[in-house]
Image (cartoon, rainbow, N blue to C red; front, side, top):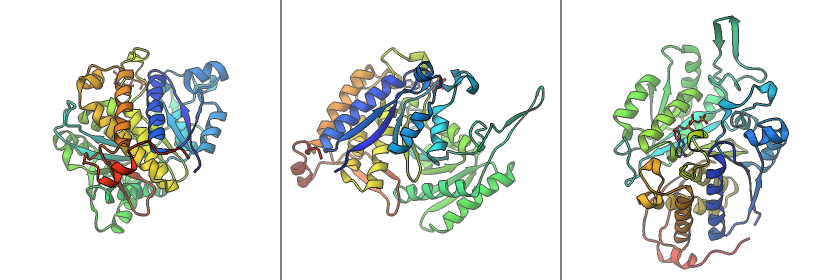
Length: 399
Ligand code: ATP
């Protein structure tokens, strides 16, 4: 069977630390679940600026396009020099260049991890290629203008096609979960653009009568998320609302260090933590690697679906379960979650726990939906049935 090719782009700040941790976990999962990896590491961010004169070299984008799957570490793009001096945001560039139109951001509480919300388990599906992102929502040039000094205009682009693609992903996800989709918008003010978004949401909702569909203004959504987060299952929304709501949801669920995400398209996908490069803690060995590890698990789930490879889905669920296991004890989770572990010792714990998944101690429950490219999983802990124990008493051979 062919090896799994993934571009690995460590990024800035804590990026190199958490990317190395996520790659260690990925390598362990590959050993246990019997698939070969072809990891192609390349420099982006400040490291690339020094060697190639740009934070996002064309060659890296081409390599990512060819490979199809990417692990992107966080980047400090706020600190980059202007574009004319080589400062290009790798995250936005890759999302548009690879047409990664859906940003899937789960937020789920863990029984052992202190969190603001008592219990929640939701997924935000955020449109990823247009909206209010003036640095990337036009085919050429920024969508921000200085009319006269002191007067600026930014344009928000909303298309039926992008809205429809996000709607489809949201309903496909909901079909494998609690079957509820909420479209979050501001159509009372942005009647035309959010009218287009809602029009597409309603069209796709009509094709899924078995899934409960509702709509909510974004300001109300911020309040309901705090007051009753457990009511949400799948939230579909435009780019900037999704960015803001997903940080809120991640914080409610335990913290940004748990915020995993997948940027998904039809042909490509990219694992990327929800948070930034956390320069305040970079190089101190204390960053929480869980966000990127869980993002890598989502990437494996996407690859499993795309290539019909069950062992990748099992590896994805095993990583999720192993992270869950590490989160249960303060000794194996990082300080941002009230724990005592550093990046490395938490990674040791996750790596060790993956072997246990591979030996059939737990059987992951994987929910994958018919006719979809998008997979999600719940990390249910159930005793392994006899067949699972029998087939996983030792690592499967590599192929
Ligand atoms: P950037 O400029 O790249 O956006 P930032 O520090 O402004 O970086 P985030 O990186 O999102 O924004 O971080 C916000 C806060 O959350 C920081 O205090 C940071 O230390 C903390 N944080 C973010 N990610 C992690 C992580 N993986 N582990 C521990 N703390 C984190």
